[in-house]
Amino acid sequence: MNNPSPHVAFAQAAETIGRVTIAWNEAHFVLAALFNSLSGADMRQSEAIYYAIKNESAQRDIIRAVANVTLENHPAILSRLTTALSRIGELSGRRNAAIHTVWAFSIPRNKMLPVPTIPHHRKLDEAQTVAQFSGLLADISEVVSDLIEVRKDALHALHDTN
Image (tube, helix red, strand yellow):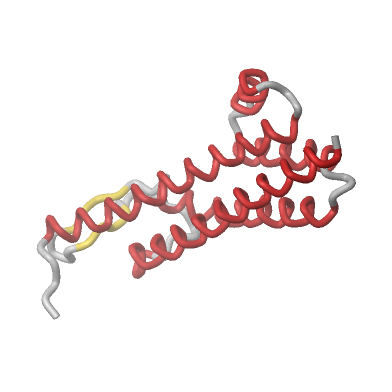
């Protein structure tokens, strides 16, 4: 099997990291929409509250806190949401390895590598970066789908209750 040219190898690695970034942003868009649905506030108010919190973990915490009140009569939906929020938290370290590593392209090795003089995230698997991030992309996509379903079910349950 022929190795791809350096330009192709670089493009493949950069595309994978870019896709992880976009998927992560989509997850947080869905989380913001979920917060809006659970908070009872109008969209502008809920966005002002949600995005005033700069830490992603704290954003998940506020969703969890609102959900504990709003979904207290819907334990199955609350459980699914709690599981999805925990999964996002678990994925955040792997996402950080992709996004916050300082990358360089090694022409002799024909692949993206972390800059060796700068410490990188402990969850980075240098030998399998593209495979690692492709798996991460699949995991993020799965949890986003779960969150969309949870939001739909929560809206349905809350609408039927009111």
